Amino acid sequence: MRPLLLLDNVSRAFQGVPAVRPLTLAIPEGRTTVLVGPSGSGKSTLLRMMVGLVRPDTGQVLFEGRPLTAESAPAERRRMGLVLQGGGLFPHLSVEDNAALVARYLGWDGPRVAARLQVLLDRVQLPATVLRRYPAELSGGQRQRVSLLRALMLEPALLLLDEPLGALDPITRSELQEDLRATFQALGTTVVLVTHDLGEAAYLGDTLVLLREGRVVQSGTAEDLVRRPAEDFVERFVRAQRALPR
Image (cartoon, rainbow, N blue to C red; front, side, top):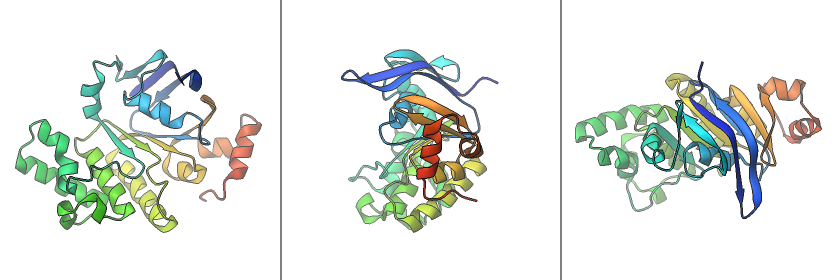
C-alpha cells in the first residue's frame, strides 16, 4: 500500500549545520507515527518538512503520491491539521474565530461552520460557552484542546502535532493523552506526533521513530525499542525515561 506521506532521501541544514541528514521515512495511512528523540535530533524539522513549512535541501516530500512543492504546499496544507506546543492560537481572535478562520475563508456558510464546531466541541470535550472566550482566558489544557479542534476543522487527511503536551502540568497532560488517543482511534486519521517522552510515544503511537542528530536510529513498536534495541544509544535513551506505560 502506498504511504500517505513519504519523505524520500530528505535532508536539511541551517547555516551549514545539519538538522536532518539524508533519510527516507514512510508514514502509513490511518496509523499514528511518533517521532521521538532528544532535543536537537531533528524531530520538529522533519514535521515542518511534512507540512511544507520547511523545504528539504535534498530529496522530496510526497503527499498522496504528489510532490509537496512551494507552489502546491498552500493548497495541500488545507488537508493537513497542525497542532503546536502552546496552541499557536491568535490572541486577538475568539475561540470560534480561531477555529473557523480558514473554513470561512474557503466559503463555508454559518450553519455549516456551526454544525462542524458542535461536533468537534463534543470530540475535544469543551463546552459551547468556550467559543466566545479568548485564548488568554483559557487554561493551558483548554488552549491545546482548542488548537486540536482548529486542526480538525477541515477534516484533514493528516494530523501533525509538535510537542502538543510539553508545557502542561502532569495531571492535565495525562488527561489530554487519554483524550488524544481516544480521538485518534475514533477518527482513524493519519497522525504524526513529535515528543521527547518515550512513555507518551508508547501510549499514543503505533510506530515509534527514534531520531538522533538528524538520523533515524530505530523504527518500530515501543516493545522493539525496549526489548530489541538497534544500538547502545537506544538502550541509553530507554533507560533515561522515568517510566513506560504497562
